[in-house]
Image (cartoon, rainbow, N blue to C red; front, side):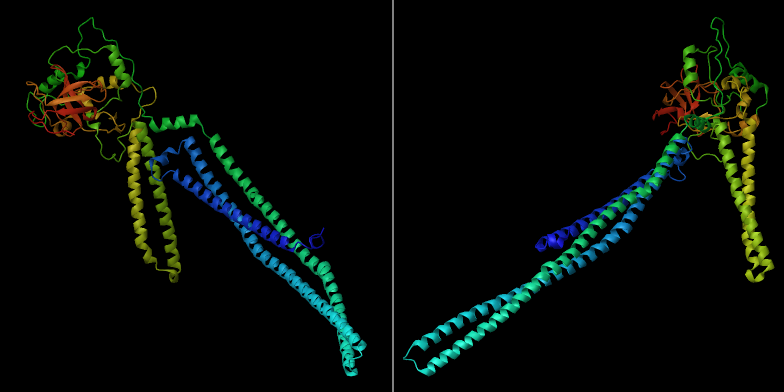
Length: 586
């Protein structure tokens, strides 16, 4: 099967077909090029997607990735980043292994095709020239033969006519001979051109054209083979990255299998455990017998008796109450239903231990006293570990500088040892600072660990503090959850006398009740079991008789017999602008 023998007369169609083959090749090149662009774009979008959902450094999101589910999601993001890298590899391999080679091959193919068809056209022009020469000699031979016949007929006519002179007859005879000779010469030339043309035609149709068409056929077959090889390479490029993509997907599956709900639940416990025990059972209140106040040891009468029996400190005049003591003008106090008390225990925030411990905003203290005991211990331990790491880095740097200084001392040409003294001194100072800082946090940590009671030794907080005498209020461990979810905690070591002289400067008249300067609405339930506080229920409306003076407490009144302090952040205050001493509260 050869184009030269089978398609010897299809020169123009072969020219169109080979041009179509080059167009197909260029179309495939364009397809691969667009595929590389799509792969790059897809890889870029995958990387941007992975980067978008990566946790931000030094943010709350970074802390969330300690949970197994979040770690699995982070692994998925990292694997997708690697997955995007494989698509970039596909794009690069397609460009290097297919596009570059095919682009050069197309240019070579165009040149080769042009050369072959140029030879074909040249052979066509040569055979056409031979044909024209043959036709020209044929027409000349035909003309000369006709002229010889006419000359011969004219001679015979002249020779038969008796009236024509002998000279005219001789002239006609010579002219006939000349024409006959010219016809013979034309015949010989025509015969020669005919033989030549037949030879050239045989060469054209049996040698030149078959050779040219065979080359064109080989060129076309090579183009087809090259296109098939490119398609195979196209598939192999994808196949090469499949194992790595499979590893990426296996990594995602492995990360998903590592998700453990129990572990995450334990992390939630470690993150939010306060260290407190749940409240104990509520004691039975017998209404069949006259009841005295349950806080008799810390009652107003005892406080007054003690204050009258003991000398006043800090120049306090008589007739003044301790701060935060309820004014109960009736010996009987209205009792709340047992179900209401139970609901308060279930819905109320953790008990407040000391009044000064409730903060409203502001920066967190350095000793993390705003956190519950368990959380505070973890934060302090974390801070100690960080300081120890920094201290170790500084010590390694000091050791390196010391070794460098020794080298300079042994080899002065390498450097001046005195140039390192300033840096060494600075590092030593940093170590001393870090050591002092670590000792400070270790002391706080030891204090917290020593103060945390063992499991089973903790008691219901309300009973614990109801059983303490009034002066011990200022020395209790303070812990309270404010409405925004933050905790405050601090340990006061001040004595009762010092507290009276510094923190409790506000005095209240026991004789005349303070007038109401506005109203307030309870935003949260507050169980005021400490001295001077009053219990409120969420949504309850009460009277404000004294504003917050900066200590975080507002004095309110329910009725003539019940008044006391509540945390300012637990109520929404509406002051009466016409009241004496009232000011706008935000």
